[in-house]
Image (cartoon, rainbow, N blue to C red; front, side, top):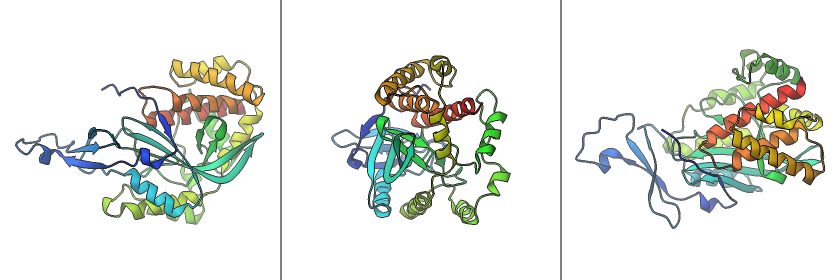
Length: 318
């Protein structure tokens, strides 16, 4: 089924996404019917402020809704000072950026450490922290926030402990097709504390103690320090590109998004009075991915963002 086209909206207020949401069982809604579709038994119903009750998805019996209100409560308990930027769609997807005071300088720009939580009520985008779903979280990563274009940048290279290891992995990839990033040899290099955090990560949330589980998970990510991705950012910033149009056309993104990225790249070159670099190119693509109207879900956009990051990194190291 074709997914509805949507353009992310921006807000700095929790109130815009912390509206009532609840599961409604099909058996309760249709008591006079025998329901044979056992894989879809609950309807996710939300009611944005000032709007009607809206059915955002039909999910399996064990699907757990993570209400944005609980995320808000946990964040406010754990973090005393932060700025909020939320990207969301009317179809029930949310990219929640918690921007922290800690700074990182890349070139002449200040980046801010951030925490990115992805949530959805329609089931199209799995709940994730820093781009990692609960079943796939093997290590605590960091993310950064770039003010000039309101980009939330994931720590896509943080699973590697050394720049040489990351470069070797990039060489092994073919045609931008990613292999499994976390290998046994890398896992063995993790400190024991991180390994213990991995073992305690739940495969899915339990609705009864959702608040506690979410609090424990976020605490682990808040304690993570900027890792290898920060070094890759610096390298991208120092490596300039020639024919950016040709490179953009070869990236794994839709043609229209590539055109928007090219326009954004030219704009930032003028704003920053800088020659085009891989850093500006990556940020231009990131901006296009998360601002354009598209049938891509938020999860699709993040997956493409990761692929683009690795492809540009590979070209910059070549």
